[in-house]
Each structure stands twice: as structure tokens, then as C-alpha cells.
Image (cartoon, rainbow, N blue to C red; front, side):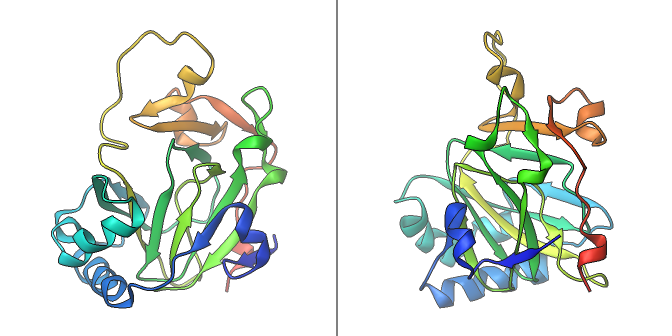
Length: 214
């Protein structure tokens, strides 16, 4: 699979690189590196106190979400597969203490709540580079960028995202995709999420980039 870089023009359809705030980025990367684990699988924490309590996090929130309440969490571990794609009604902020790769597609490519995995593109993001992944971009857990290392990635979202799930009558098809607060999910049939009842909305191959990284 071709792996683009977030500096390539192709990424502008999915997100952007966030410039400036170098001291704040450095402080967040150091806390992410020193205070969060790298599990053998993949783990996610919606709000991490070691990140949330940083003066740098408080300061950069004004730029990232215009001062609206924001949560600083992480997604760390080892992964090379697509498995699922999700979207929010908001952008997501990512910043790696390590290099990482995102597998991305566009919401507009969903047809009848299904997406063919051949629409997915891979993007390499170097450690220390902060990116905004647009609300119109489908994404999920990062992938490791190197065979011999995992990933540690900041996940910045509006406060309350991925915390619990609203209980209400599901009156249309999109409602059935909602698996957590502000989180709509499409799973591949091979993914554990599908076995847990998530909407099976990814057709084609369950992409695995294990042979595309060094």
C-alpha cells in the first residue's frame, strides 16, 4: 500500500498540519512519552490527567478549539490493521511522541452506510508534528510506522467525546452507527468491534500495512 506523508498535497483532503506552539507541543510530547504506556495491543484513554493538567494543554486549547472545553487523551500500542473507521461531529487533534501512520477515508465516500476499503489512504506523520484530522475524514486507531516499535499518539477532542453512549431510540440508520458520545463507527466484519455488535460498514479487504513498513 502506498504510504503518503502528511506534508504531501493529498493530505489536504483529510486534514492539515498545525503550525506554531512549538513549546506547547514539546511539553505535550514529553508527557505523552514519559507518562503513558505502549501496550502490546491498542489502548485508548479519552482524558489523561497527565496531559490535561499541563499548562501547555490549557494554552493551546484556545487555538485548537477556540476556547471550547477540550479533552486530551491518547491512543497507544501496536497495530497495523484498519479494522474500523469512525467519525465525529468535530475535528480530532493528533500529535505523536513517536512516528505513526493513519488510515483515512472521506465521509463522502460512504454509500448506503458502507465504505469500500479501497478508498482508504495511508499517511505517515512524524513524531512531534501536530495535525488536525477534519470531521469529514474517517479514521480510527493509528498504526505503528516501524516494525520494531509501537506508537504513542495524543487524541484531542471536544470534552465528553467517547465517554459513555447516549441511550435513545435509534430512529434512522446513522443512529445505529453511534457507539459512544460523538462517535459513529463502521467496522470490518473481521474486527472485534463487529463481533461486539458494531455496524459492519467496511467492505473489501481489512487492510494490513505490516508488509509496507520497515
